[in-house]
Length: 113
Length: 113
Image 1 (cartoon, rainbow over the protein chains, first blue to last red):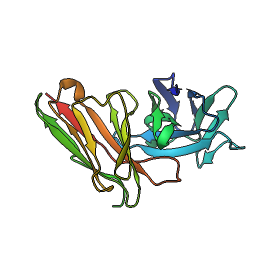
Image 2: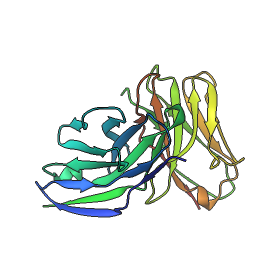
Image 3: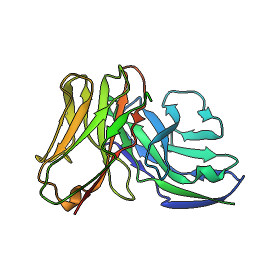
């Protein structure tokens, strides 16, 4: 079975500091994709970053980077230089059959001024 | 606006009533997904369509739930005889073939009194 685990219900970070949000996954598929989405209070799911299981390098998108450790089955999101607008729920997701995404329970990030 | 559109954004209904949500995907996205998200949880997969064909249904989709995509464009999700446990955000997402990741709408929030 495919599963995503996010063990941090809530995280605090000081503005301009970096923060790491944890994500571990379980899948028996030899090829898979991992995603991070941001969900602000408005409710829309905003795509942040994608990592393919065979990608040679860790993905980066601006201030977002993905620390992918395949042997440990972890795909942690690193946000550098946190901004107040980064306060939101963050979800890790694993690509399943048919392109559907399997989401973790999320981490609520609060950025302090 | 060319994103995924959902209607209505908010719906309050009494227990036992039927409700219907509509989703208009991004033009030419042939895959369409429905998710349910309860407070404090990650989105849970309900069902998905490839064009007009419903290819997968989650066990979460009880007999009171039905989804259609009659012409392979917009989709509807109907809940019959609503229960208080149906109160949730219903998210729609779309994706074109060959592209990983989903594009989400802003969701339809259902409150059952």
